[in-house]
Length: 340
Ligand SMILES: Cc1cc2nc3c(=O)[nH]c(=O)nc-3n(C[C@H](O)[C@H](O)[C@H](O)COP(=O)(O)OP(=O)(O)OC[C@H]3O[C@@H](n4cnc5c(N)ncnc54)[C@H](O)[C@@H]3O)c2cc1C
Image 1 (tube, protein in one colour):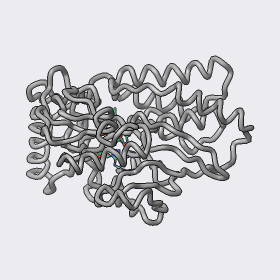
Image 2 (cartoon, rainbow, N blue to C red):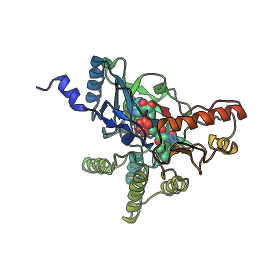
Image 3 (cartoon, rainbow, N blue to C red):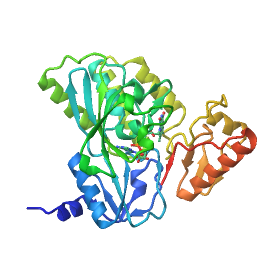
Image 4 (cartoon, helix red, strand yellow):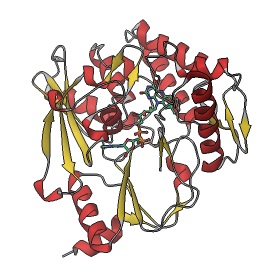
């Protein structure tokens, strides 16, 4: 029989470059990295980390995370992005936390359900989307969430605990998950209508969605892969809603996927009346370079890795924007980017 220790050792890899796990393509060598494929493996990792005195650090696709150049050797980095699971239930869809959000939009494409359209080309996993209430224009994850299922990092012995939408304390890019050490392992998402599928069609659909997953954090590949999927569906005669095509035009037009980045760096401050990108523009900071990092020429709230950027280059630009915005507009912008 395999011991707990052997299972932990089998799950963990050492000397892995974190740069391959972040859309910033920045991050040094992690002493411990694991990609659990089930909630049982998550529990085992937490238990093993506690016994070994390691500090577990959870992430998804790394599309909102700046990893350090020299990670602490006592950290156990783990991502749920290889845990992809769907279950169709009456009036709802169970989805595991590691599932890329964009697959929800594909689920909608194949079933005629439009409530997930806003997740198309929204990088990242559902778990992180639930954590930070990911948003695209007026739509956000809290619009489609019914129940989140979590493990308390400090009390894994409690098992999986459901949190209904009303308990998630959602606001603009904020939630209970940002204030408490909760690992989202899955969620029930609302379905406006039940897709009329036989069990065989349901199995086929979920197998197809899983096959469409592209486990990469390289943004141009991500964009090309899912855009091609939509174009292929249109060519095959599927009704592709205009909203989905608009996402391609909008995100492609803003050059979101041309260089490694984590999307918007700062949250907007709605009391100011202008989005962060506009404030950075007004300060004339677009195009500012520090080392290999650059404030995008096209969007003041995006800092790109233009080649060989270090985490310190990005944080230098973060500090510069914070100082200039504070001096000119009287507030310190809050990063949306998670800086490890
Ligand atoms: C090109 C580009 C465009 C973007 N556009 C948008 C946009 O329009 N709207 C938007 O909201 N965001 C946008 N983002 C940011 C990103 O898509 C979201 O923040 C997304 O939710 C991050 O998912 P992830 O899996 O990559 O998270 P990660 O970067 O891996 O993790 C982010 C945070 O979530 C926590 N987390 C991850 N998984 C879990 C879990 N299972 N349980 C609890 N906590 C967890 C991590 O601990 C970390 O603190 C964009 C990013 C890029 C690169």
